[in-house]
Amino acid sequence: MMDNQVPPRKVPNFCSIRYGIALLLLLCNVIIMSQRVCMSLTMITMVNSTEPHGLSNTSTKEPQDNIKNPVYNWSTEIQGIMLSSIFYGILISQIPAGYLSGIYSLKKMVGSALFLSSLFTLLILLAAEFGEALVIICRVIQGLFQGIALTTQQVVWIKWAPPLEQVRLTSLSLSGLLLGPCVVLLITGFICDSLGWPMVFYIFGACGCALSLLWFVLFYEDPKDHPCISKSEKEYITSALTQQNGLLSSLPHLFAWIFAILAGHMSDVFLSRNILSLLTIRKLFTLLGLLLPALFSLCLLYLSSSFHGTMIFLILANATGSFCMGGILINVLDIAPRYYGLLKGFTNVIGLTGGLVASTVTGVILSQDQDSPWLKIFFMMVANNVISLIFYLIFAKAEIQDWAKETQNSYL
Image (cartoon, rainbow, N blue to C red):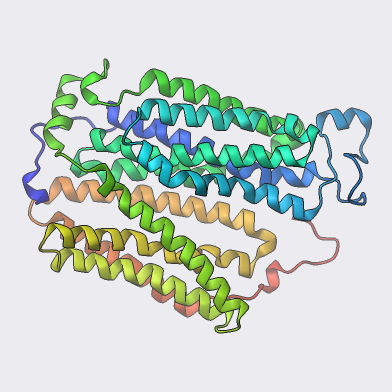
């Protein structure tokens, strides 16, 4: 089916409007993840751990430094609620955002969601001055708008991505979700030391507001309406695209979200009831998260003779990868909780690199092999999953490693 969709003429890739949109979404996702993660890093400077809980906001630092770095007396329970509250907003917004994306303007939804998420990032310091309850409310609302931005941006590619470039453009834009934590880890400590922790929220909030304005100026919902697109690129996109159903495009992401929640709940049940050891749980969910997508991908190649069969295997191949949420994706927290942030930064960079390499290789294969390109691509994906799974099953650990154990008078 894909072999018949040959573009009418060769159009530049990276010097094109569609790749400019992918880059713009990449930056949006970097900002969104930066706004989400930054409080996890600034919390250590925001909280006074030496004062008894229950008192008003206090500080043991000099008065002048209190202005630069306000310190609050929040309990560890309150800190945990603050850090996790943003995910409640993201959870609530997923299904409504997916539904509304088929009704309202994507330009307004993505741009407004990014702007409002950034606005509530700027309000964190003001909310903290009035109490922890307002900080939690701000974080929930912030998560609500981030969920809208993350969900609705996927619909952009219905009209902007030619079928032979959908994977490449989507992976490029979503790679910002991996790059964002890396950016935060690199610069947040420097900002806190030199400018104070409030500037972390001001900088990421201001960048988000500026980027949302840029989105309103540069993005158009349909290639036909964009004033800067070349005639050849417009013809290339419109001739290559076929009519798509937005609901079907969203189903893999919806089921991936459901399976991720299921994996987290099942792994905690197995552990709390002593049904399986922690290492067995991690290996089991990694096995499901890597092997099932490989199997369903093979089914997609050989058993999907009908439209409905293709959709079922495609959804399962994408969604079952979320089982890794209960396995390898959380395993770093088991073996090195002390270095969790640092190691996640490294693994995110490796994942980002792999995503970029994979999308590039896919594009090369599609452009050079006109006979059976998708067969090679799927087999490469299956081989990658199986090899990674074997390596993990052999070497995986679930206990804190000696090099990661806390030692007296040692600091990260």
